[in-house]
Length: 244
Length: 291
Image 1: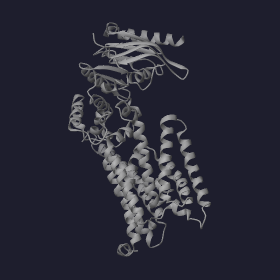
Image 2: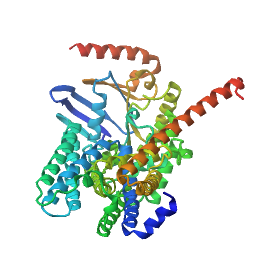
Image 3: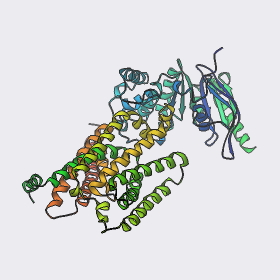
Image 4: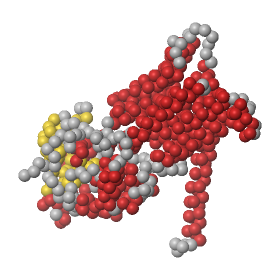
């Protein structure tokens, strides 16, 4: 049995004195597609930042591929929320995707031919290879999202973390992105944070509901017939916990 | 004054040749560094560094040293302080920059006032005097240009990553803090170069306006640097030519030229935008079935 891709053991986290996550246990295995859902301020993004090693847990242990999150960064692909970016930043799609090829050992000078090939392969995987020389500011919301996924793929990661990848696109594009992630999930572990549970439920095999505490639902519980039922129930559970 | 008269003056006076060359060399620095300043939106940091520099110049002048070496030391110190506060404290960054800005100037004014002997012309520090640039200054400016080119040539990729997305750069193993401090040191070098052309008060204009204009016409960082440098060259050269005969302050003339061009460029771009919008609207009205 191989190491879990991502594991939280008894993890708690607090910003100053405000507890954000309490006693969280979570195991993500190879080729899982995990959707992390929950209300705003419930700790979804904190969970992701702990997994990336941007934040350190107050208590407990986070491991990625059996290593500390920081040590595992080279094999992790990350797609941040795009709402924070300057859309007019002067950069081409190729240069943006090539950023995924940066590493501690490769900082000086130019990108190698291998880096360029890997970037083009990543763009092809998400079907934006035709856009390589276009400036970022020319792209639609969906194209932009794909380009950022390509950047995460360019380093050939074993796990992909995405923070609200559909926050800035319409529902048709949203579905395209989920289809793409389902494709990528054939070779990759995918962890996706979203506030929109309804859509994601038909694509993932595990759902983690986070609102300070965390409850994992398995694929068996989220068959298509039960989706709406679970959605309601989990929302009720979350609200219930908020009152505690 | 005609162009030929200006050319005659250039041929006749070595100080005019020095001034032209100083403008050209400064354009390289301002085009490259200014592009980072504009896309990273840290013009206020540039302003803080350039004004704090007066402290170093004042102290150096008081001690009888070269004011430019004092400027360089003060600029690097200011850059490191601002960088560390930004990276470590993350709060009240703007307050600290404002304080550094004013305190640096206050130190400079006091030291200059207390310098024995006849008092230095403060305005040449504040507003620059490109006509007084010596051959020795040119060598120094050239060395700083080379340093800027070398740093950007070596670290183009991590600079871009840090300027675009610090968090992602950190996840990819880029030493973000080091690169950020290095970027601020680039600004320091550029400030010292530009002080000799337009003076420290007007540095911020050459650090932002050419790059901001360039940014309106290209969506690639490298081309933005080239275009900004070319614009810098035009502004310094034309500014020098225009100010020469009527004996206008050269630095102020250069900055005014850059400012007017920027405003004109914004106006033209807005107008183009509006015309295109109007044409689309018009086309749709004439061909209601999507012609």
